[in-house]
Amino acid sequence: MDEGVTRAENGFLDMHGREVHAFSMEMANVGFQRMADLLTAMLRSGSWRSFADGLGSYSFLPGEFDYFLTQRGIRREDVMKLPDIDAKAVLEEYMDERRTGEGAYRRPVLQARDENPEVPGRPIEPFGYTESEAKYLFNGTRSGGTGHREALGTRVRRFTNTGSATTNASSERLPPIERVRRSAIRLSDEDLADLIESLRQEQRRRRRPG
Image (tube, rainbow, N blue to C red):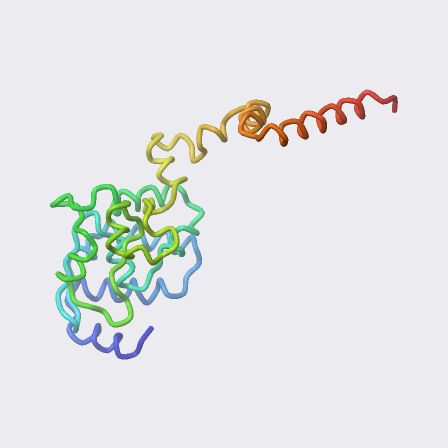
């Protein structure tokens, strides 16, 4: 962590600021299980919503937990690696990119940057973004950046959308023979002919004695 940033953050910490600072320091060097515990504890504490340090006073809406995390130096890639799908589903509820612009829930990221102190080297970033938000965030310069990205990925979103029933797409839940059939009908005529011949050869092989 940058020493200058640390001094500024420590200069005028209020009660919530001290909690946020302790959280940031511990998050810098923990395993995934402890990381999940720290993230959910900070989320539920509410301290991240409003706090102060030497750089100024911060204020985040209920759906801006990812904005808060990125300004603390915590990356989406790190949170995505958590093995606890239930914990990630809880976190996602407080960073739902689909609700960006919903007044009391989540501001566009550029507005959140304007309305909070700037932490050197740690700009506020969204974990997920809609297609329209991506266009002005990345200005078409980032690979894949003009598409919709779920805050914590498609599997977590599917888990929440199905009421914690599954992380698998419907195609992944099909019987193997149906998955093969659906793949086969998308083949070109030439590739389909090659596949049929390969299957015939496999049938002949299995019919041989011994």
